Amino acid sequence: AVGIILGANIGSCVTGFIASFQLSRAARQASMAQILINVAGVLIFLPFISPYADLIGHTSSDLPRQIANAHTIFNVTVSMILFPFVKQIAWVAEKLVPPEKKPEKEKLTAYIDDMQYSVPAVALSEAARELARLGNVAAQMLEESYRALLTRNSDAASHVLQQEDQVVDPIFKTLVDFVDRLIREDLTVPQQKRCFQMKNLLIDIERVADMAEDIAGYAMERINKDVCFSPQAIAELEQLGKHTLCTFSAAIEAFQNNDKLQARKVCEMESEFDKLYWQARQRHIDRLENGLCSPEANVIFTETLRVLERISDHADNLGVSVMRA
Image 1 (cartoon, rainbow, N blue to C red):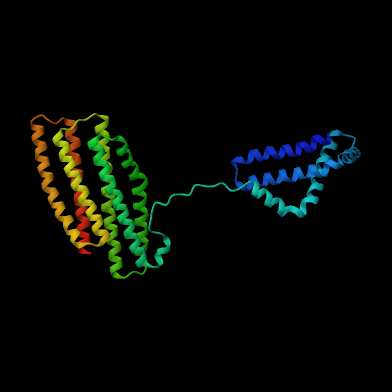
Image 2 (cartoon, rainbow, N blue to C red):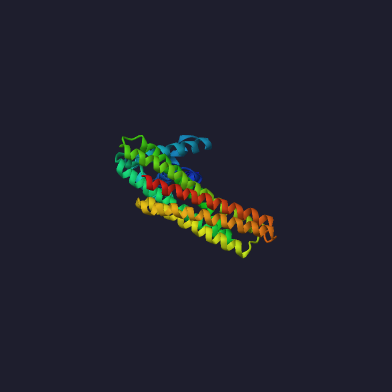
């Protein structure tokens, strides 16, 4: 009976430790410490198991009572013997149950952090770098989206949709919150103007990313409905897509370098786009009248042209903002 009791002490502790796997690290450490204590206690009692059994036999004639007494004497004796070694047992338990390595949460922003508020000049500079970085992400989405539309690449279209949800939207919100808090700091008048400028430009960039998402949606629609474009339509979308991308990328670069000459060039490129846009629309109307374009292709083509024209307008907004700064 004494041997069974000693084994049961260890077995119950092991069972408890296994059950604690889903619990906190502290709970697992406590279970491991209990195992160590009971194993040590069994090792201490083993050389004296016969005298111990005789002692238990004298405590009562009733077997259940003997078992209860054996548990009590074992636990009290082991606790008294091991009490001076509590710190050592805790140290061993901590080593045997190491902390779980939690994957570090990827930081979306590259330049801004809360420590910069105390130096507004630095905060403004880093916020501008973050804004330019977000603009470059939107430019990449634009290029990928119209390429996906032209080549019917579903993977590229899906990646654009993913970028909008997982990158652009979170960075946009974080950066807007950063600038809003920065405005409440003790800023000079030029610094306040810079904050308001960045807030406006952030809206333009975020909308460009939204429109890239729209084009990716048209690409998925073209793929799912097996919509065919004429070679002329593909050539026109290629030309206008490239022009829009160059205009928007130049606008981001003009902001990044505070280059007023390049900003003026952006505005000129936007005016040039308007001419190309109306020419493409007229040629598309001619194709419709000649029966060379299906209704499904007509909707996707005209909507894509409209979106590209709006993106070009947002690029113009960036250019005008840089020239007036």
